[in-house]
Image (cartoon, rainbow, N blue to C red):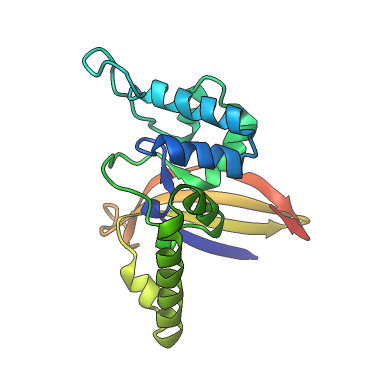
Length: 199
């Protein structure tokens, strides 16, 4: 059996423009780091990007992560931390945009609660309204999707679940293709959990 979940790229935390506070909450709440470790790691991300507080902008070179795996280049960011956050991050190029919390995965709402508690109620109301609209008008969610999406295909094979992740761009088929999207990147399949206990 296969189930597919679509996430707009904007619904995830962009590691190229996330604030220090957002990074701290991400590492603390989703990777389980202690506050001091989370603060140090968030600081290291800013340093790697070249936009740490107090940095001389004339001398520092701004760098972007090109793929999610690039965050492993950050001093102190281990594979364990990466595996804990990889489902919630993106490395989009739009530095001015922020996370669309109304469409974000449920687990990311803990980050919003920590960083913008006043915003949480508005987002929860927006999610509830959207959910009611989708019940009343099936297919409406499909019509509102645009831009870049992450498509997670969870495949049940034997006693394991495998995740095959694709990043796609909507709004134009590939040359000679019939599907209404272009494949941007496909990640290698990985074991995601065992039957009865999907991660």
